[in-house]
Picture 1 (cartoon, one colour):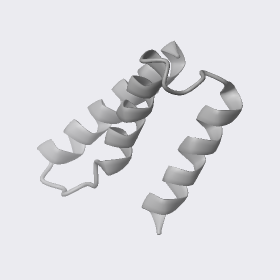
Picture 2 (tube, rainbow, N blue to C red; picture 1 turned 135 degrees about the horizontal axis):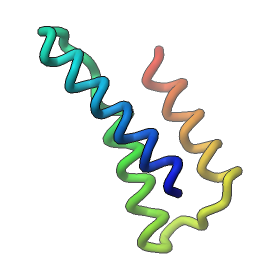
Picture 3 (cartoon, rainbow, N blue to C red; picture 1 turned 90 degrees about the vertical axis):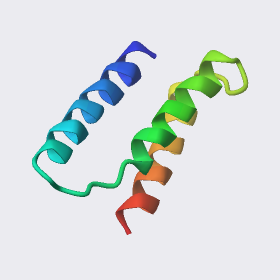
Picture 4 (tube, helix red, strand yellow; picture 1 turned 180 degrees about the vertical axis):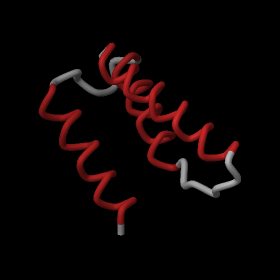
Length: 65
């Protein structure tokens, strides 16, 4: 869980850097990751690596196309 939180923090910092340079970046993926963290912490989703990886991979594929 801590690795996922660290990943989101790094992505958010990268997003802020891009925004500071004037780029318009899509932040929907970061919001989805934050939602996933909330679901896991509220015990609405079991914190298994497989479920987390499947969710993130599917959201990544959707946001890339």
